[in-house]
Image (cartoon, rainbow, N blue to C red; front, side, top):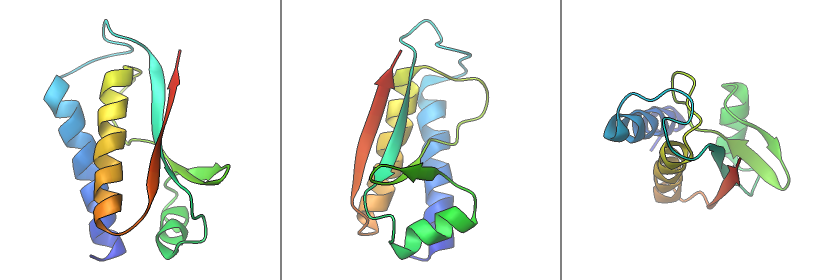
Length: 104
């Protein structure tokens, strides 16, 4: 799988996670928080590609990529689902990940 294909799959995973729950603003009546995918190996070639595409940010340790979900969504259920979908795509490409969750 090329890096471009992986990024397209990440975007599709985010859209699918949001679509599964429906339109939500803010916390959407649920719990607020944040979730992201941590790629522990910040020197992985795919992380260099993400950095060049301005996707994610440096974390400790590694690289943190947050779900790319449109709108003002802070619902931790949606964000965690999107993060897990992203992690699944990355894991299938052989990239080790970890889900980070920050509840409000």
